[in-house]
Image 1 (tube, one colour):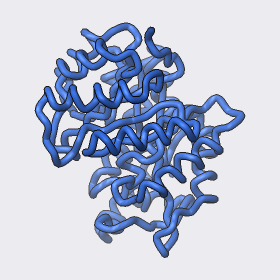
Image 2 (image 1 turned 90 degrees about the vertical axis):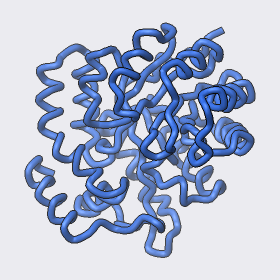
Image 3 (image 1 turned 90 degrees about the horizontal axis):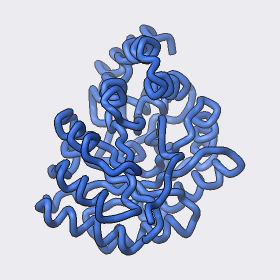
Length: 299
């Protein structure tokens, strides 16, 4: 029986993780950021993804942040899609089980990085995970620029057909042909999300179901409204918002994400600009460019 995830649609925010100067997680700040997202119209929260600097966090820290997310959404319509992926199949299974136990609604599982598995290996990896957490929804995460490997359209469709709980993909390959192949060939229950802010409106026009966003950390209301308009077929209004916030969507990747985003959020008074090594704060030149963008779009 197919795992039903009708709620998995719209704007999801790949949450930043606020750190204090000593490197510890700022729990109170994180909770306020989640509450701000919900007030801004975002009902899908994605903690411990790339934007959350999960690669520099211990398993205990990641589980703690996911617990904070689950607590913060209680009593609301919001759902938590927790980042649980790694380049070890066994470790990913173990952590995904823990995340399910603490109350997350689904898991976002990135393609194995560094290992560079074949498509056969990719299929085996995600299949083993899906079988080990039956009934728990899984969103694949394809981001070749980070992982050095691509989940092909054929492999994505094969996984969607083979496992009832592989219910979606976050596609950040930038390959429109690949994404269109997935949209055209997917089972009815399978969702496709843009993994890049800038490709959201065109991909929704092609049949995608939403966005996992970096930009929504800074401007949740505008980003979620853009997605809402596009999903409703109101592309005139979706385009207007797209072009208005496009400079920020692009500026968030002037340097390695989430460093630019955290600078903007610091300027907005939302958090302290602390990152974990090997990420460092953006350069003076980038700061000036980001300030200009903020002024341009009115934040």
